[in-house]
Length: 127
Image (cartoon, rainbow, N blue to C red; front, top):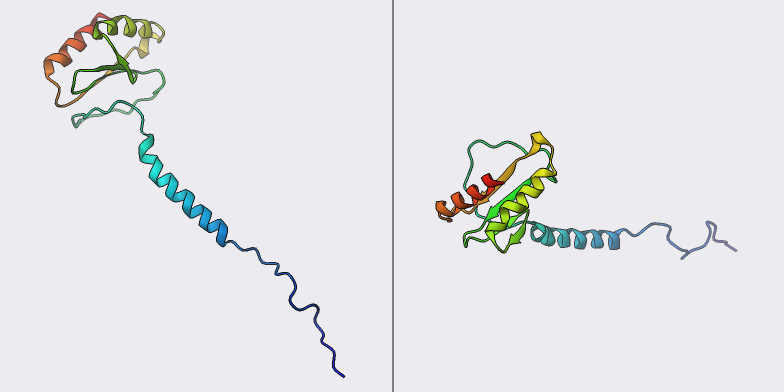
């Protein structure tokens, strides 16, 4: 008479199945790859290529004015209804900044007429 030695046959497998986790990670990777290009914020302005650029240190405190091709003016990505109000708003924001950090960055579309850029620059000089 013979006996089987070695424990139970057909018991639970102690290995962890990582296939479902790998499937989920691949799906998440694809989702992030698709969504990331859509998350860029700001005004869509076609900028000219600069030859000498400096890196900005404090992005949160900067004052950015952008002008689109159609002449629409933006102050820190907020559309301005009347460009003449730009002077008062920039002046108010400049007063909140320390003396050495009072800088306004101007972005203008390359297809915009230069006379419109000069008008906005004159408004900014008044501030």
